[in-house]
Image (tube, rainbow, N blue to C red; front, side, top):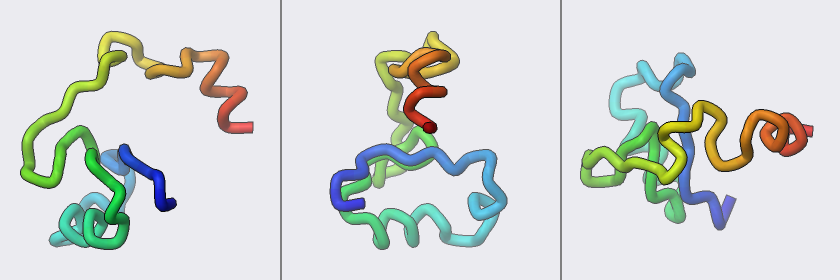
Length: 66
């Protein structure tokens, strides 16, 4: 995970743990965006926010998961 930049765990139960964002940023130094926010707590918008499937598209995401 040395190159992981963005991670979204917002719908995961771990997101309810106290101090989880700080802990995750500490565990993954390359991470710049967690659940749509940077380390300073500022909201970060992706270029594909209008597309519910993100940069891969519906079909590309299925291929990416496999």
